[in-house]
Structure formats: structure tokens, C-alpha cells
Length: 139
Image 1 (spheres, rainbow, N blue to C red):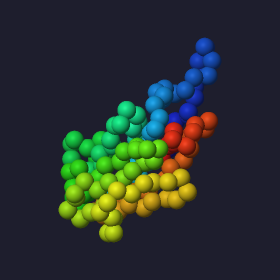
Image 2: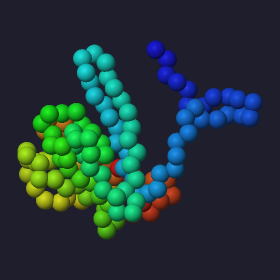
Image 3: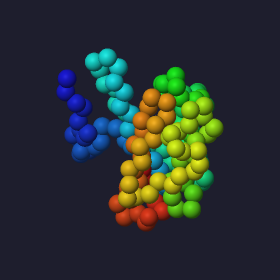
Image 4: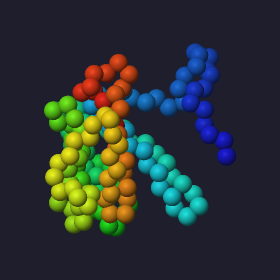
């Protein structure tokens, strides 16, 4: 198997193979890496939290990011951007989002937060975008 090139050459010059739209900050980038038997499925979710939007994580159809794990609630947790920080909040899920987490916890730029939802582990980090202020960060 050969990976696709990021750019192709046309008569009008070098152009990206896939146009990626600009995402309004603040936004979150989630990488999906699922291993089913011997094949691995990967993907990226780029989600803007501009205008007080909330990101819903869960296994239900109404979730913004669906996680195929029966131990996860339909709407397990919510991520939002509040007062210059990303905030992760359990949504009254049956088993919680972290063993010791039952209240809101900010995600800062110095640490990686490992979050266990059922049997799924999410690692959250905040990284400033190039030329952005602290309140305009990608995670």
C-alpha cells in the first residue's frame, strides 16, 4: 500500500489533494486510532468550539464524536471552551469519565490529561496554534 500524496501537480501549479477548510478557533483536533483485529483505522476530527459550542462525546447518534464502546454512555462527556480554557465535564454517565472525576476539570497547556470513558482512553492536550494567543489554542 502506498499513501496518497498531500499535493498534486496540475497545469495551474501545485495544489492540495484535499482542501481543508479553515476552522474558527478555539478548536479541538481529535485523532481516532481503533484497532480491530489486524487492521487499524485512523481519522481526524477537527471541531470548532466557537460561539460557545459544546463537543459531545459518546456512543449515541446525537454525539458530535461517536465512540463505539458499549461501556460508554450515549452522551458520556462534554468538552467546551470557557474563560480561555478547555473544560471537560462528565455528563452524569453511569461509570464516570475518570475514576476520581465527578466535577469540571480544565485542560491546561502544560499537561496531558488521560481520560478513561468505559474501556476507551482519550488523551487530551492543549497546543497553541501558530501565531495564536493563549485563548486560541488547539487540543
